[in-house]
Length: 100
Image (cartoon, rainbow, N blue to C red):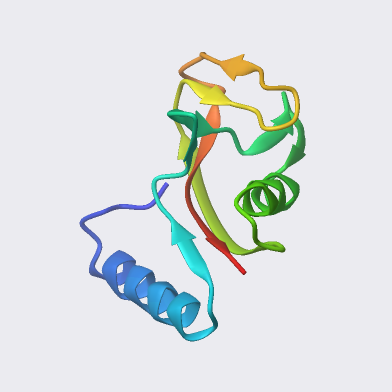
């Protein structure tokens, strides 16, 4: 997980936001759907990270994700099976997705 007090975090965040804006991308942060945090996997423990980020972007009318961040959080909802993960130590959700 990132340390929000680390000055490099701010520099990286601002750099990615500039890149996303320069390429016509859209930044989603927080990443929610119907008020729920979006899980980093399409179903529990399967098709995680890039496939789930890409699916989120498609649902929002974009082609794919160019960048994403996630951290452990709960509750989260999977995009494919619409299952709710409510376990503090095993749920991971996106905190940022850049879509194009």
